[in-house]
Image (tube, rainbow, N blue to C red):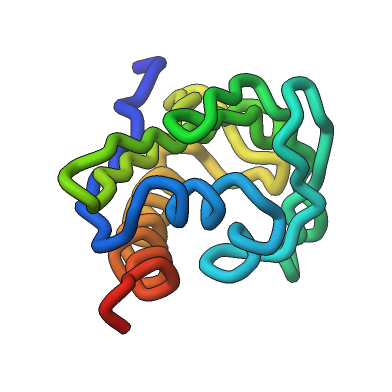
Length: 139
């Protein structure tokens, strides 16, 4: 019991690192593939993810290293990190969603053990379909 494995999604995107960085480190970019937000790429900046029926989720930028890494604390337990590596004109993108704990529940009373599986599938679609489509230079 206790700590659960981080969710990790890695994909090779057909776009230069600067384009992927704009997609994951600007409010407009994040909204285009994920959800509306008030993000600003400033260390310590507090912003919200506008999560529809779940309301606004409070977040705070915890690390920023353009164009290679951005992370932020999300809600009361989670951290989300985006890692980018240049790969011959393309970009290797890794999403890391950490802070999972079998003893904890979300702000909505849902056990992490249940929501982790839901989020894992959701991230798969968001990264491999939405983000990929948003930055793909061939489309």
